Length: 119
Image 1 (tube, rainbow, N blue to C red):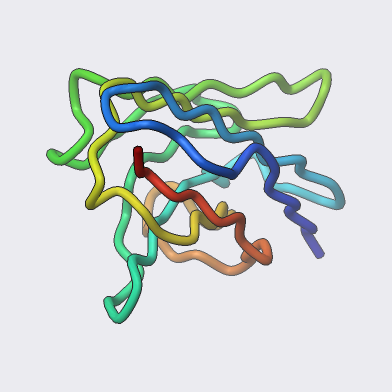
Image 2: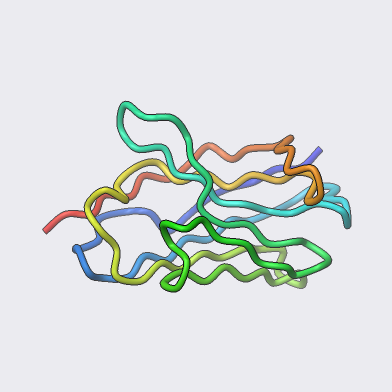
C-alpha cells in the first residue's frame, strides 16, 4: 500500500507561482512514478506532470511544459510540483498519484488539495 498526502494549495494570483508537495509513505515500487493531476470544477481529472521514483524521468503535459518543474526527494519521500505564471483556468483540485511508470497506471491517489488562481 502507498499513501499520498498533498499540501501547499490555496489562493494564488494570476501570473504567480504555485508550489505543491506530495508526501509519499508505504511500499512504493522502484517501477513507480508519482504524478500530479488537476480537476477543474465540472471537468474531468487531467494529467499535469509525473516523475519516475527511481528513474527520475520527468514528463509534462503540453499545458504546463516550459513553466513547470517536478522533483522528488527520495530521502524525504516527497514529490514537489512548481508551476510558474499560473492562469485562472488552472484553478482546481490537485491530486498526486502513484503507479507504474511504464504503463501509466495510477494505483494510489491522495485526497487532493484545492488551488484557486484569482486576483
